[in-house]
Image (tube, rainbow over all chains, first blue to last red; front, side, top):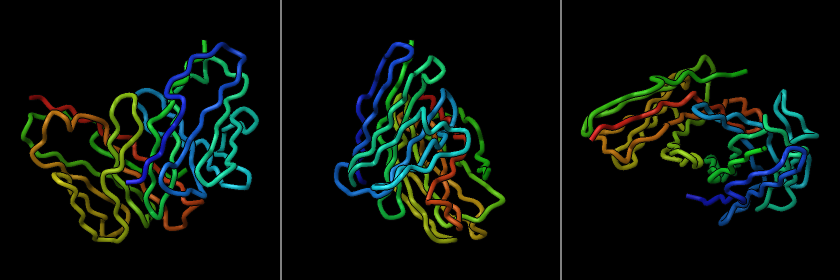
Length: 113
Length: 113
């Protein structure tokens, strides 16, 4: 299957700082990527759909000014958590679609102190 | 929003036993995907289904797209310890809604050697 990478895999930051997470499709081009958040023992919660060359579409209840998404190329989408707070600590996973299948990155564990 | 009901929530089985889990919805889907997630990692795609009635195998795994297009099941035969993990179903609605996937709540599988 197609490969999606994420960087960093783990980040610890102080409250009030911003954190950028990168998502790359390694062997295919993705016009659409998705960003999810996952709490322990729970399912994946879609945060936003990232469209190459246009604005992201955010799910209800997700603050677009807090979770900035940029999809500058067909292989790269970034999620920036701005002014992070402890409640933003979570597992963030990106995904990219190739044909009908959707492949996930390995996730980024964010811990905000 | 749309929901997928996945059951069972958890299973504790003996190595060698067969496993069955399913997802149901009141909505109609045009794609069903089954994923496995291990701790600290992103979901890995196991099987993709695109047609009502489709039955697809991947090694010891078999999944079917329900004929009503509202359900899907995943079977694992002769389970082994490395099957441990959380299994998620995910579906894409007929009316697409941007191509996003809707996830089930997950089935946590434990296999006793």
